[in-house]
Image (tube, rainbow, N blue to C red; front, side):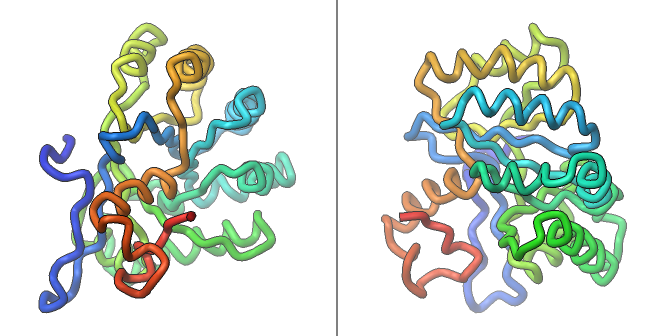
Length: 243
């Protein structure tokens, strides 16, 4: 279900406690930009295929939402694979340790889940990494995930379109994309097949695939009239502007 009225659910007023974290459904409708997001990341060969495909499109950027145990499993099989994605300018977001439903966890268990995931990310990257975005497993928005996002400074990230399914279905969805689309994909055969066919179409039609940080930056600039990005007028988790 796509939020019909707002691209981002804003923070509550300062008088309301506790504040809700932002929820991002799509980017700016005024720019021909798109965020391609790949969830779960369980299959090494398919992730390697995405890496190979992206090397053919050096201006494209994507966001990965791996589960925590996949971070460790794939790193053991291909040492440095996650660093290569980050070093190439792609982004990594939180998607739980093992795809268990955060909505059925206590707040304490959910926070422990995030911390375990973040420790795995630190281990595979070998350096600190600032995580801006978190996507709830199964796309279930819940008070528990809100608490997790608020406590760990995450923007809750949903999607406005998906390219899953058979190739014909995925390509039809890709060619129907709108400005600011956040596209849900997975690291699996069907979605990689669609990506291979859709990438040249995106390039030929002047689309700019960006990380979520860059797409969210567009939203912040429009909502706050280009202010708040480099000063203290917004909470730290919103100050993601790049220039």
